[in-house]
Length: 92
Ligand SMILES: C[S@@+](CC[C@H](N)C(=O)[O-])C[C@H]1O[C@@H](n2cnc3c(N)ncnc32)[C@H](O)[C@@H]1O
Image (cartoon, rainbow, N blue to C red; front, side, top):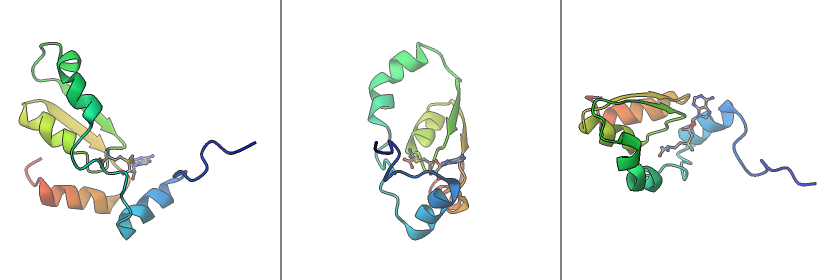
């Protein structure tokens, strides 16, 4: 029987190493298409929504939502990813 997680990241060290090596093919530079398509449903007319992004990486969606006036909190294990994100969006 094959391992369903074969060829996938399985632990924190691998994620951190991946960021350190710049192997970040998982990063969505244009943001989440799914979120963009469904943003009206997600917001349902609300303003000032609090969004939580676990495993956020450098999700540009956080900046997009913050620019709309929402509050965003992200959690990311890689310090490098966080520093790079802060370099791009220093005011978040
Ligand atoms: C699929 S990537 C997210 C990519 C993000 N959407 C982007 O566009 O950059 C998942 C992220 O979760 C982080 N991660 C994985 N496990 C974690 C954990 N237990 N706690 C915090 N961050 C974690 C990884 O370092 C990685 O950046």
